[in-house]
Structure formats: structure tokens, C-alpha cells
Length: 149
Image (cartoon, rainbow, N blue to C red; front, side, top):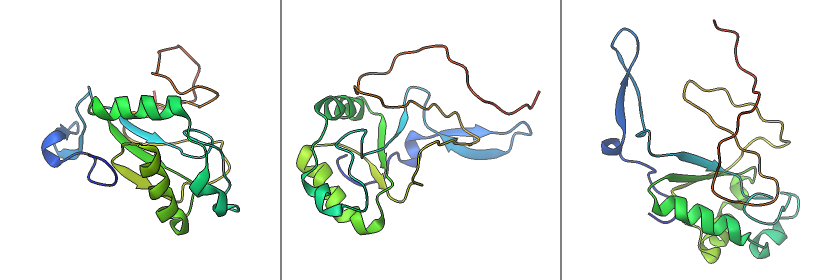
């Protein structure tokens, strides 16, 4: 599916249960990744919200376009998660379409400033974008976790 839409139907989700056998929120199959991808400085030129006139003509990163569209065609869920505001939704959707990005959803209003620490009851993997958008590889790294032993 191109553009906004339901990332996965209920039929695509797998039932999940807690320790007492009660139903909990369903999950995607283990073979399907749920990508949340930033826009500015990650898949294209970094444009601050204070300069929205630059958004329509920002440069897209070709390696990001190729990799994201490949993930989409492999059946993974692609959602752009940006610090752009709702006022920037239309220009952002047009920009994504003009550059050919295939995606399922667009979430506006991500907190600004970086230094993110996402806490969730589902598996979360975070990858910091530096210079090239490629397929992901596995590395062993140190992370912060809750002391819940």
C-alpha cells in the first residue's frame, strides 16, 4: 500500500496472551518489522520546522528511498515519525509522494531535540542514522535496561 493507510490488518496480527492466559494487544508476525523512520536528516535534507518553505524542495537521500521501498515490498510496515507539525502534513505527504517513498503511515509531532529513550512493553530496537541508509546488520552493543530481575 502506498501512502497513508492501515499498516497491518487484524488478520495480519498474531494473538498474544499474558501469563494468566488473558488476551493482550496483538503483535505482528516475528518476520515483519514495524519501522518508525524520521524524515529530516534521516531520509532527506534536514529542514527545521522554522523554515517550512524549504520542505517542498528538500533533497531526498537515494539510499534511503531504495532501502525503505525494498523493506515495504518485503512486507514490512513503514511509518514516518517526524517532528514536523500538523501544519506541515500536506507538504510532507506531497514530498514523500514526489520522491516515490512507499509507506503505510505518517505520524506528526515527534518530540524535538533528540536524546530519545523509548519505553514500551513490546520489543524496541533503535538505530541511529549517521551517513548511509542501508540494510540493517547485527552488532552487540551496550544498552540501558530496567533493573527488573
